[in-house]
Image 1 (cartoon, helix red, strand yellow):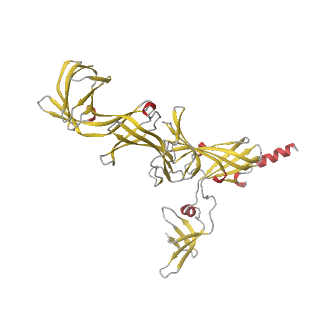
Image 2 (cartoon, rainbow, N blue to C red):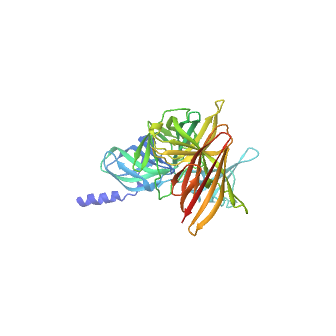
Image 3 (cartoon, rainbow, N blue to C red):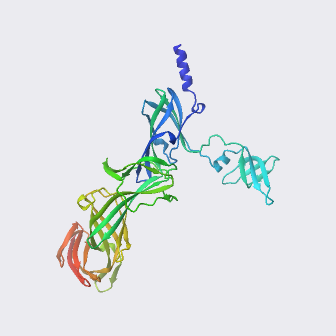
Length: 475
């Protein structure tokens, strides 16, 4: 009897997956959905579903998965009792007109074409080929028709085609009854980015900062009432990600509200930062959605005009004069301290900051935009908005002589001209190579690093300021 039981068990275990009627599990069986979306255009999807299982071997068709799923990343576990997946098949041969034709080669099909007189012409035969190289039909009377026109009728849906991607599992359960399966996997086509709006008030040196999260779902599946988390940081991937339709997709866009309270709570996670949505949300397929990430009204900001000699490569030499002149543009820079004392103090995900200012009529005007990298709390945010119109500078090398085979001296003259009706605060940044030392200067300088110095000066309204310094470099 023992041998008979063992033999019977072996026979049952050998029954192929295709010979067993699968239990169908759809999104309607879902008890909970959660996702963590990463900057790189992919997400970890987690779902709990109740499915009826029998003791021993079961075949489950798990439908409504993301079309951009990475099957090798699937993890399945039983919440009520242990299960073991013996075999997994990812089925993605979806129903489409071309797929039906491809699988109908060698079968009888009909082409129906409307005639000018209102009648219908029917052409029936065996489909010999289809696809990019054209369609060939052998009619019932033996003729070969190339690229027949009209609507195509087939007698039945070819086997193997499915309406939506599915996972087919052959799994072993220790006990029967309705059980909850915890399923997780990686999928592409889901992404998020941060965008910031800063309204600048130059009168009191403050900005009203609002951070937005833009979510995109091109995974081919709608995620209803999902718990949402966003991971910020540079997470390494060694495998390619199926991107879906995030990049360049014609996505439906939800407009953001004019104002709403921050919807996310931030926490440190490993060496990254995790933002958790308070409440749940639905991400429809082919949709872009905006949510408030943070608000910081009245954050103090420092505005400076920065002349950096390395920003301009327009060197105009004057032959025989011994003078090299450079026209340098002034970069408009705003600096915010990302601290709690400044009404901020939250790790800021990388994104684009767009800055605006109200004019005398109260209308919002665009000042410029800049991209920031991931910025920790208690660090400065520096924004480059563009180049100033009324403040210009000329940089002249008026002397350059060799002291020895390992040293030289250079005299540089920088003239900053202010054509505005108000004074301008200006930073003049100079770079040098080798070991540099300022021998004398008409303005006080601050050493930024081993090869950079900065002059912070105020230029009077409709006036100018001249900075002259002598630099000795050794190597």
